[in-house]
Image (cartoon, rainbow, N blue to C red; front, top):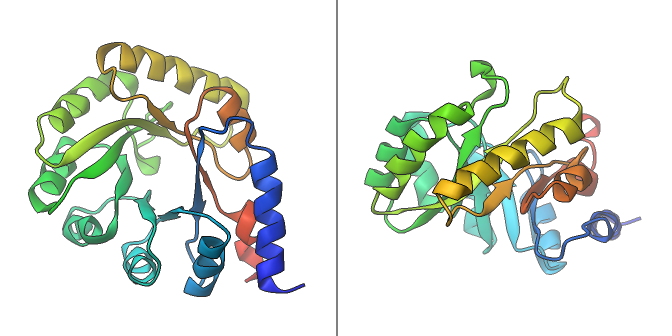
Length: 214
């Protein structure tokens, strides 16, 4: 089977499981070559995600699409990320929001990263800290607050986690009604995330294959 046939089959399998046609599928291409991105673009994918600035810069230069950055943010790299990322999913500090606003040349869509357990090693803030970040985003000149992003703790039951995330998002949009998007769900749990209300899913290995074999 050719690489194109493999990607086409995997993509069709994932798309068949997306029960809501309004869900945005972001194909996460970290560690995979530009050639894979090109094939997926030809297959109709228009949203790609990267966790590393260097890869995002390289691939976005080669393939025209909507590019999402969802990795850990380092302040010194925000200027570079702002040059290629159309959407940033992992903002969790007011200082990064201010820095991004100051270096952005055009509007960037952003998600605030929610943490269910407050573990600082995994990024994100708890629900009580979201309003301050949202207010900072709304006061900016170049940032468009899309909504919330969350990666549930590994040990948590996915349905329980996504149900809690969705409840927090509902409370959040009662104050910030324009922030209607919820970025939640990856290869192992995107169907549950969609069922619980996710509007954006970030899928890599289910389409591109296991990274451990590459």
